[in-house]
Image 1 (cartoon, one colour):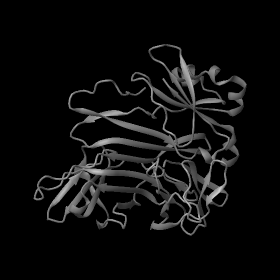
Image 2: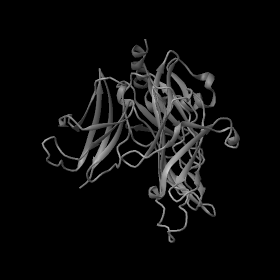
Image 3: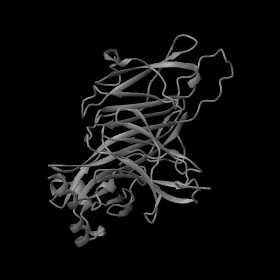
Length: 373
């Protein structure tokens, strides 16, 4: 029933809200860049994304842009606001982008029709300022398109933070700073996968992770989750699959690093995720890192346990470059994949755009890769 409804909808992002980057930061603050993307448009070939920016400083003006899959949504002026609408493809063809009544529907949701409706007011591709005491420099919010009996919806499926790497400590006897180089939360069928890397990994033997609900100030209600101390994986990252998370709930987390020298160091991740339930029979592929790349790129692949799937790399014409990208298990249903920028026979490929494609039982998850040499 849901599959039949897929071909009827196009998503339109209307920018008419958030705060964008001003020229001069406030005192003692710095800018955090934000990338917002929709990760699974390739699963719905009849769906398109259009970013429309309604200029607050020029009432009535709306600029529309076609969004490519897995591309950051365009920013808007600091006084513009954002909403997401859906519309039918046939309606878009008949009416034309420039004639869609987006502004009217934004002002009055009651004006929505069977061919145009408000989907979300919560997506904001603009960045934000944070205090200079934070090492946070970038964040990525990944949304997924879902089809329900009530029509299309967008859910936040992954949150990723990027930090400046801490400078070497001038005094080896000084304790490390409570800083991370990465923090992400990904919604999986089995639960909420949390991954992080401390800026000084050599200083820690393990981590504990506690969680609470309510508000950020309700930490007195926090409880430790997991089976005790969390050890680093072979790639140096720390991971925990929170299988007790409930769909639709907003969680706050606190990391506590156990120092090799003795003692503890608390960390407060800046992103506090909402767990969105994911279909257990869906294959997902994380954005490649790094991207662009001069050589190898790595992915996380999320696939149902015991399912048969493979990972290939193709060029822009669809020709297979590598038909069997090696993967290794990380946790139940989670795999790490690495493509070394070469063909299957070992020859390096030239610079350009390539696509990693995870395939399973008639469905596929695709990510673009840009190689530079």
